[in-house]
Image 1 (cartoon, one colour):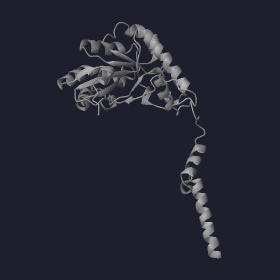
Image 2 (cartoon, rainbow, N blue to C red):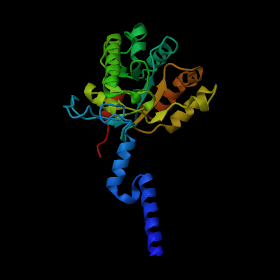
Image 3 (cartoon, rainbow, N blue to C red):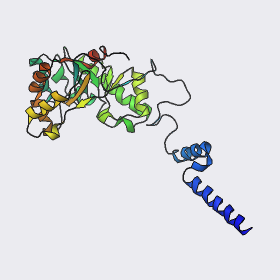
Image 4 (cartoon, helix red, strand yellow):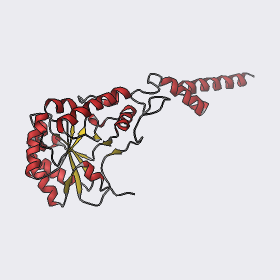
Length: 269
């Protein structure tokens, strides 16, 4: 009898331990229930993690969101992109370089900066493309669905007014995504664009040629290349090396296109 009681006590302790650990020994129902209780600090719908607004009809246009890091293609194409502008400090320099070398690019603009600096880009975006990079470069992944939508809508209108072109692409600040961002992207009928390769200015201080050589070596067909036309002095390494980067990539047989043009060359399958 004593052995039976000791066995029962051991089973009771094991059962309690499993319950406290998340219900592993209680089966799937116990695990799901424990997890759900633990996560009640997050809103069930409409919060940063949720890609829905609850039970009511979801007003999301076509209802499809695709995240794009690059394109599968055998053609030697790449899309050069610049984030965070426009600002007077470096945006004109980037536009001058692109004009000199006849290179198209995609500019993911911050709405408030586009509104304040519209004169910098007006009349200079002929073969370029614009995208939305949020209103003030705040973290969209921390916003609820309605707040994220309002932020992007405000930025959309400012970029359209400043450039005369409606953006149809979104690159969220820092590449941060949450369900609410996906919901806002669907409502705006945007395409969600991240990147394949990023400038690595910090690895090449005061060495624009070395940085350009590194990027030229790393690019592959279908690459979406991320740069910035504003920021710290460190980023000037990439911008000053743009001519070498452009000529080096052309020497490897690459053609520069906008993101939207690149997407049209994607190989299916």
